[in-house]
Amino acid sequence: MALRGVKVLDFSRVLAAPFCTMLLGDLGASILKLERPPKFDGKECETRGSRLWAARRGGGVGGGDDSRRFGPPFLPHSKEHLTENVEDERLSTYYLAVNRNKRSVALDLSHDKGRDIARALAKNWADVVVENFKPGTMTKMGLD
Image: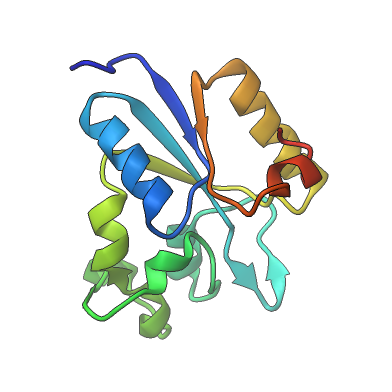
């Protein structure tokens, strides 16, 4: 594969940039997608991070890439992960279509600790960083 060994840190959301990083993954790059953590009772999840963790515990909504909720059509999670919040646990086929070949981790960039982790990943792990925030957003977060 042409890009085997290339590591991409993916801050993207919605369509254009996730499509870009999907293509990089198709060509062999290793993609790590950073997404917002889910909220629990109006508070961000600080340490547990993943949407799947939230779904298994019956809480946590609104985390991840916004396109996780675009639809229909939707696919349900496997039955072992379903809780009462079935509406929040459906997988958007739109999201799935442009996020293959990626690993995903939830990281809260509104907190210093989350930004510190993102900076460390960009500096010490990634060969490429992809983002599609409004101009100036990465600078405001200290991630430029």
